[in-house]
Length: 223
Image (cartoon, rainbow, N blue to C red; front, side, top):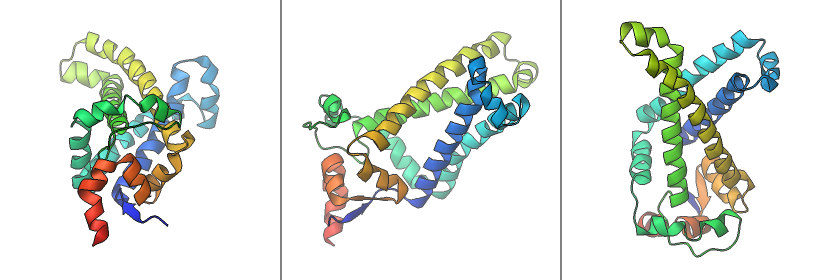
């Protein structure tokens, strides 16, 4: 049986699932804003007012995982940030075989870091869309404060609406891809163990995060 390699701390796991749960809550409570076809969602929340209340304050909860991880495990957050903004030759070479890998076929992919290039792209898109959603959401929710107190022009507030919609659509596409690679992909089960229990198998670490394994894991396992 392959040895187990620690990948994520408990605070990271908690922050990840809180973020995922809150995103889905915001997703469902926001759907009726885009089409009357989704008015059935209002029934689930006891009416439009309740749904909007949940959406507004759910948006505040959506920010909490970042605050939580910075307070409890800043080292992991800093490591994540450094990784996703660090790109080298092996990262770009990852995409040559990614199409095959995406559909579960064998591909010759260079050894990857703690986060492979696909995970880095996913993280960057999540950070970007989350930033747009939060900023545009606050502008719409507290429009009077921004215009009256802070002197923002009405055009900025109006711009927040299409910005929120575009960020919403892009974030859903990102999440769909993330969920597929986490649940639907043939190699998803070992990776899911990492975000559920915090550990992945040594074999999986070698195959999908070989550079990280060689530089930081292999020698520690021998100790």
